[in-house]
Length: 94
Image (cartoon, rainbow, N blue to C red):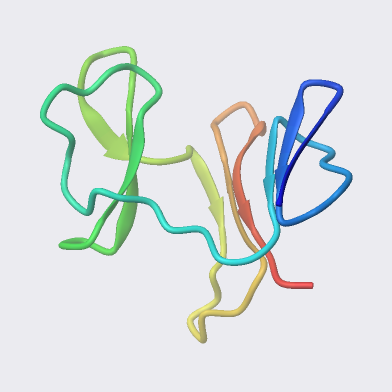
């Protein structure tokens, strides 16, 4: 089920509260850097086990300036924030 409300898109839920909100597992592909990256792209690097973001300087960097979680046990929630404290990625389980 895909729902659109007030310019928010929800996948698997009826009332999304963010630009994109997904209920359930989310999988990012590819697992290596895209050949023609653009600023703002993100992927999961299976070689390093980290999320990578393509920034304005034209290079891939580990996502987020401040990172909380996951705990060594892999506990949720997992939250990535940029250096200004803005939410970049949140993974939780309800």
